[in-house]
Length: 145
Image 1 (tube, one colour):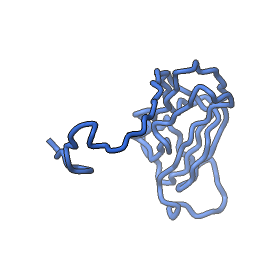
Image 2 (cartoon, rainbow, N blue to C red):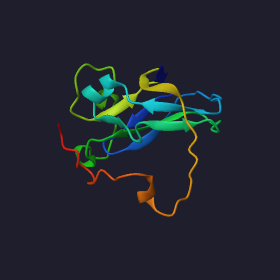
Image 3 (cartoon, rainbow, N blue to C red):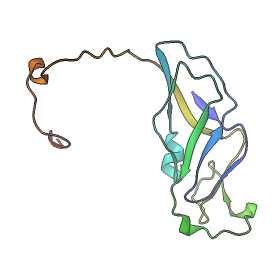
Image 4 (tube, helix red, strand yellow):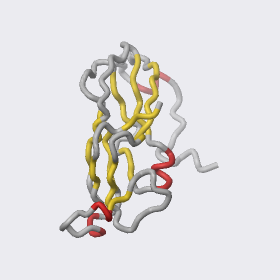
């Protein structure tokens, strides 16, 4: 489901902010909500959900906030007067040169998914080799095909 901003937020190049959603919910035990980016925003704008996918666990009871970053370098913006004529909006069809984003109340900023989470029970052992053969290698060892 799409999640909307609950208030107007300005994101300058290089900034990361929590975008309030106005939502609080009780997530059933054994479930989590995953926060994911909206593909249109990721494709058309330099805005990213900082901890994607984000996790909201069943014990959380406060307002859901979306951590969003404007990944344009800070040097693209010199501090000074911020005029609304410099704003880029996430529903704009094309990227604007200023890189200053105004997320407006009601803008769809992320998606959430409710999913079941299995509980892990860790069991200490003496030797990991007792559990089977290691395939060998590390990061990238299985190739690219």
